[in-house]
Length: 388
Image 1 (cartoon, one colour):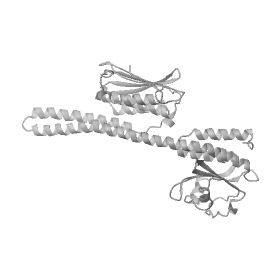
Image 2 (image 1 turned 30 degrees about the vertical axis):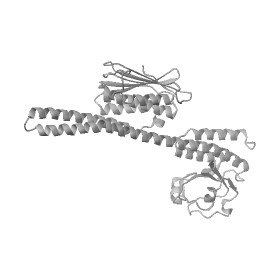
Image 3 (image 1 turned 45 degrees about the vertical axis):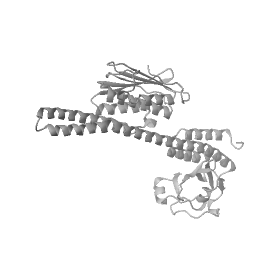
Image 4 (image 1 turned 45 degrees about the horizontal axis):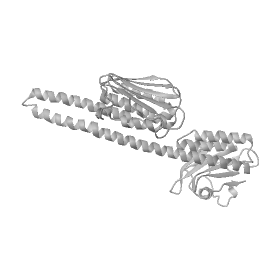
């Protein structure tokens, strides 16, 4: 880094921090691109990510307006110099890109490019993408120092891009797990009730002529089962609704969830709390899912008249509490259908270093309390989880 002065180091540091602050692949790519263009004072910048079909999976441009981009036409293929660079892990620095032997052509609406600097974003032997910068604003074109700066940014960008891909894959796995959970609930709850409803309706039909009083009783059971099925389906549909924890924050997401549940259930569901410090995405996800599971269990099994979700902070931890005035249960008793979800809540809390407490008694409602540290690493058995 001998070629970098203090101002350039600060610029690189700011660019790296901006890249690592994003989690989605698209956001990381866009931040890399804008940071590179600003850092090297280029008029134009682009970032290409190859696919497996001879084209680009992603191709972003900076310095070109939407109108210009539409006029340029379809995304470039991996031809000419772009194709060469996506197969070569070495940077390319040129005084005039048009002088390169692999240069082909560009569309009529394409801006005229002269001086050029291309830098691969590499993870091991894999080329994750390529940065293209053109037309340095200052006279003289791109320098060896510019190339060194861009190499440093690309190295950090590779780490951020790999992490973003891993994060998105982990979210995809979480979605699959959630779908599997919902499928189990559909089978265990809704399917069984629908089967009972059909049998009861058949019995009512058979009794209608010879025993109207008994038939009326069976029809009352049909109405009750149908209402229970509707409640189950409402809960499951609410669980499928997407939540934007990254954009909303935990407090806003929980408030929205409580307001939605309050509208679709006859039980009063309310949220009380305040803005809390941001947790890591994994911890926020765990806290949200634990709250969702606790409220769902109360509505499904506790027969409460109200459920309250509370959120706050204490002693460096975010505190989540779900209370209800339902029928309650004995936490020390063997697992029953009324305690579905407790195991998953314990596991979620344990995985992020949180502390889970469940307090309940027959006829006295239930309290689920979670404490998640704001700072420090999560993992394994840190913090633990317990039922009191």
